Length: 190
Image (cartoon, rainbow, N blue to C red; front, side):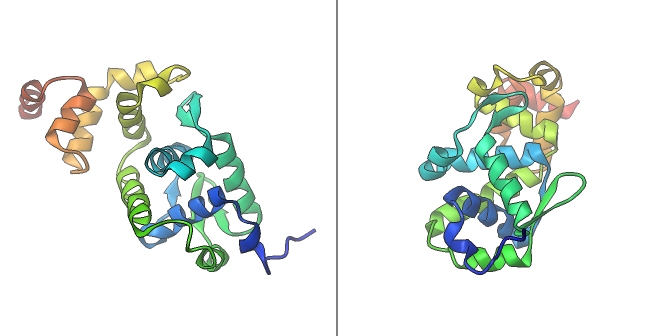
């Protein structure tokens, strides 16, 4: 049975609208995989209280995880509002854009700008760099991680990479590396 898209916007959950908003911003640039998706949603939920209430993040194998966010994404894919690539990239469809247009009152302009910023930040990072940022910034979400030890072994290298991409300050990069700024500068010179 095919789902009718006539009044689908009325039935979209606020979390589904959040996902569509995430996929639409930054010129509809796709979200590149499950790690990026979960962590973008996590950062959004930490900034926008109402998303935090809907998403219910908990520690998981690869940091913060929201089962309801994953289910919402799968539902959006099944309704043809989101296209899922073979490599788990997610892209909003023209139907998704149309339906999102009917739900534009959910977020303030400040909240929409934050969603843009989080997507831009995460899209510039590799999965390992995303996990380093999350593990260093939110240590409570490392307790179930299967990658924590591996990520921490390469934290200096990955923090240098993040810094060179220009997405964090020198102070933030040193924090991610787990060393002071002077030591980080010395490592950069080597």
